[in-house]
Image (cartoon, rainbow, N blue to C red; front, side, top):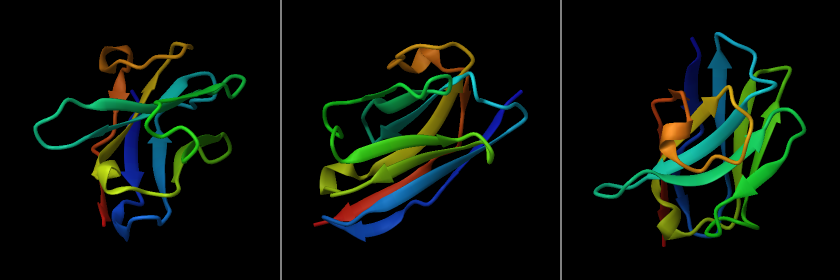
Amino acid sequence: QVQLMESGGGLVQAGSSLRLSCAASGRTLSSWTMAWFRQTPGKEREFVTCIMGSGGTTYYADSVKGRFTISWDNAQNRIYLQMNSLKPEDTAVYYCAVTPFVGTFTTLSNYHYWGQGTQVTVSS
């Protein structure tokens, strides 16, 4: 069993930066695939980015490419999401998710474990 807990959300102005953190416990995730999704009210949860722990290959949604960076700290068993040049449309609840399988997975059903989410609000 894996437990995930996000932190780092908040209210920021457009153009600002924010770093989200996801602490994992229960298993070492070094060979897993880890991801960030986000969701706004009334919309489906959407893929943001993922990273394969073995090798560090990353993949990003077009909407965040060049602005967001996912990373993985093996020693701390933490997943990070560095968000730069934030826009109001980035406002959402952000969730981290993991799966023991390796691949570029962009759909919710691929992921086995989820955190509770952290709110990010970007004001214009």
